[in-house]
Structure formats: C-alpha cells, structure tokens
Image: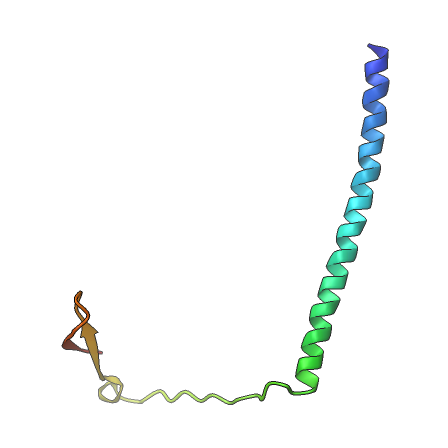
Length: 85
C-alpha cells in the first residue's frame, strides 16, 4: 500500500511539471499568434494595400419616402406580387 501512495505522489509531481510546461508553451504560442496578427494588420494598414472607403446612409424624414415596392417570390420562383414596405 505504501508503494502505491509513493507512486501516486511521484506521478502527481510529474503531472504538475508537465502542466507547467504545457501552460508556458500555450502562452508562448498565444503571444506569437497575437503578435503576428497585429503585425500583419499594421503592415496592411500602414501600406494601405486596401483602399479605405466611405459609406453614407440617408434616412428619409417622412414615412412616404421610406416606402418602396419589393418583389415577393412564390414557391415556384416566379415574381407573384409586390410587397409594400
């Protein structure tokens, strides 16, 4: 019985060492990944590989201006009627 307890204690200590090494490895990989993402996004933004665009949305003041006719399709795929929105 004593041998079993000694064995379990040794395994417990070994498991804690392995857990520590695994946690450190995980943190290193996480730091490298985050650094890589920030580095790539900085390079893409700094050199303006993608051109920035501006988007404007106009919201009408009255309800009549916001209504429109939209086609509604039936199950067979044909345009059956118009829906007032």
